[in-house]
Length: 561
Image (cartoon, rainbow, N blue to C red):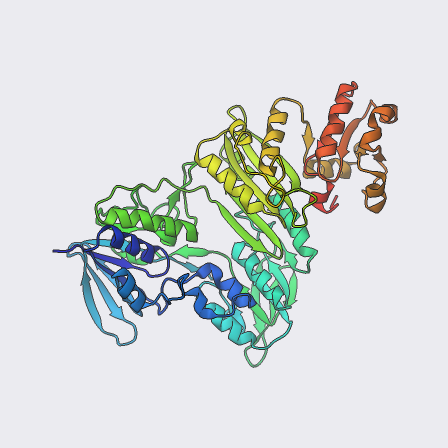
């Protein structure tokens, strides 16, 4: 008698587990139960559909060879039975049955199982704000949401939109709406954008660059209510920092795991609020597995339980569960929290621990910030990337990295994620044999350069100052020399407006050492940071004792000092 596998949830994780189980066990009887009418859709593609970059809605449901992933597809190509518009109401673990209800006909019946999979996903968190029922107010979690927004906008050209939440989805929505020529205001309760993704220094740089493109950020701001006109259309967002006119409001403040079905069946819920699973993705019932956005996972560095709902984890876990449903012992070790995104011409990524997280966990760290070209400066497709590398003091263990810029930041994050996964330290990262050709990288890649900055710091060669530290010193009025070592042309085009700034071109520095005071702290800076390091070593070699340089250079920060 063939094994009965029942999977509750048909978006990403469930279908992946079903497909893998089918390949390993061709004779298994596999059933997927999905509450909605759409299955196996590309949720990450919704912002591109909203913006019009993806014009055909069906592309979010198609295979690479143009077949729609619907019930017929799963039956004919995967040999899996899919039941849509049917809700799993409860689980009888003793009888090994799922009680379901067809949401269209009201029919109720039981589905027996030998092995059960919970892939119930997550739902948007909806804050208790008055006015969420007004016309023009949307969430953004399902293809239906994207369809409804496009229908609402119709042929509207321009207009004012307010996005509540400056997380990854919020910024992707802002990018999509700005492509539709809408003016976007992003309201965020915390004091930075992308609070779960970037450290505040990196987030500050990104916020400045995105603001330059026309988006407005209201940080440290709480939405109090939404107001509308007599016809029920949203007109205004009321915050504790004033009112914002709005014709469209999108609420994107995170998601919560769907665990009620599991809780009713006495499946253990973890401290994060998501379903607890072991390394095989089994729940406390060995015949019930859980995966995707409804489960918690282990962070590979902190070893703490985390709730990190990501499409990549759902798909990777699907393979693990698919194996284990049919007798395998495949392990899901955990995650690094690697996340990447694109918004308004900028590529952004992170992996591992942020500097803030590392410090909170008690690590002593050595970090470095580097700003440079993603490929040779003379190649026409070059772009800038700001990268931050966090390592453990003493061991040199790589703890995390963040990167952003119009250049290829994601490639660098993937390299660091690979190094962390293999247990590499900063010395080993610097020795990775990365490929070079002008269209792809510089002879020494940005990742390697950044690792070398850490090595130079540890060796005592590079003595640096962060932007925040420099701003604090400048605001205090410290008596110091701000030594600009750029060219005369660069200095005349754009420079810091401060009486403590002194220009000495790097090529002239050895001949003009007597023009630099020896009794003051010297902070050296240039466009990207490379010349500053050279200048620092010249000054140290000439007997100067208190010299530091600005990490990343002026261009990284758009002269926001």
